[in-house]
Length: 132
Length: 130
Image (cartoon, rainbow over all chains, first blue to last red; front, side):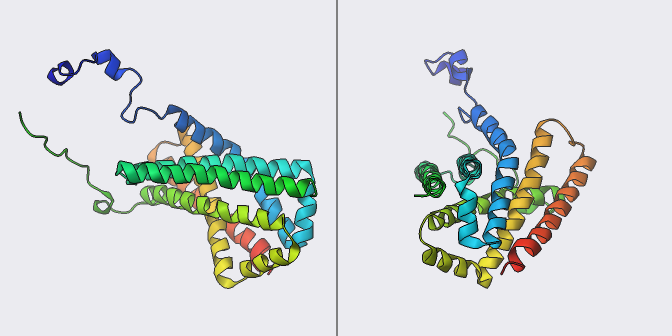
């Protein structure tokens, strides 16, 4: 009790909504939802992509991506996939990197890098789909 | 006032005997990291596909070298392993298969299914095509 009394915050104020990491529920649920979504979203585009790549190469792949349905599948895979990957890497970093400075720097690189790569992949897919 | 005493830490990994459960847990994480590293390569592939064919063909030529094919084989296994153990994690989160006997059973199933799918896909996509 003594340690609590030394702070001006009430015990309730300290406890309310504050786990050991002060956050995490949305992250945990997000990780599960994206993993569920990725079962079809990774299987369909990735498997079809490899099939088209091996049976006809450049032309076949581009033909396949001309369909808005294929392009949507690839873009959804990129968006949900990078979100899931960034979330997963974040947990790994938080588990093993304890220096606050290195931790925030790495997390920034992961999050911004994922966003940039997802955007680049999406734009490349759109470019092929629109035939530009 | 007493100085802060360092808090006791729980014994770390190397103290424990390796078991199927712990090994599969750490491999779920390792394959996850591996797959995250594969995503940029997939984006590079898309970017080159959006460009001209000669540059794309150079990329495919590199992809058909032995080290690249081995990496692709590793990614294929990581993909199916992480998929199978990921489904296992979702089932656990829903409250199923939590008895130690079921944990081992689903573990062996995940290993068998991911290995079988890897062999099938490697035969179909990797060696046949190149």
